[in-house]
Length: 373
Image (tube, rainbow, N blue to C red; front, top):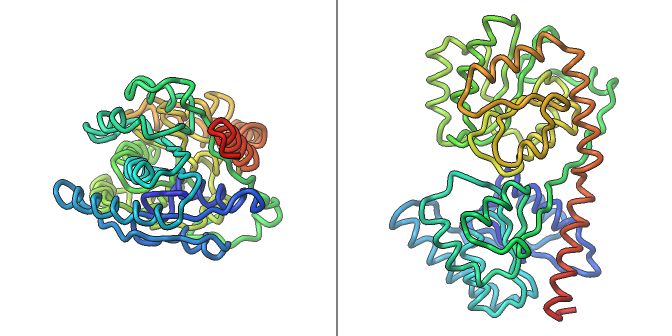
């Protein structure tokens, strides 16, 4: 049983979809348990023949959040007692905590937690992690940076953690197909398109990105910026765009289920995050041969090679972000070269097949160690 907080559109959800649908059906019978209501990815999983169980946990902070979590814990424990899985593998913070406790009470033989992000947690999270770590047989992290962070903050043993990098499928669109695709969002052939993808949340540093675009606008004509995502910061960000007179340059596309239809028209992909684990959106941009300008946070430097596949800048620095974007827009050949190098790097180190194979191998190793095979 895979347990995840939500099944909306996000990096963890996409990796769960690809993992659960790619495992050998002769070895595994996967099912998904979502703490919250079913989202877009859940429907894709069900279409692929995978059972999705939903606990309908409500969002909430403080007392309401704790009450929702306790209710979800009871329902999850009851579900695991009914299903009796050999393995519980969880994703995202709340699912990690609740699933290990539920699995402990349900007597699940093998419990795995995936940790995908470093930074931005609630103050109590690491304390809870330390006190419940004995319930976890193994941790999976998406980068070495996240692994080191977990060792430091939760005092975990290195041998209890394995890094499995995210994987992505290479963009198979040919130049001929790309040129024949209709341009979305009213874009024109002369536009220099900059794309950023992610939930509209403080983590993604979009306010710094927008301030950087105000600087880019002064240097490069005909720029268009697409920000794909939705979230609680949307109104604040739109107000900032209006205050900087960028309404003609910046387009909020809303939730985009298929970024692959936007990437062909993109000159540069930008990630302005304040903290990260291993961002899927950057992988997808590199797979589409797009140069990346990104902040040097979390596992991003393990993905983007500074000066080769993109440019890394400090977080919370709109001036540095602007300089990097301007440099690539004014040197298109350099940008194309970085994009091709990024695509090769994804092919060599971050394929979907490699991610699934390493996960499968880890499952087999842990099952044998616990004499479950």
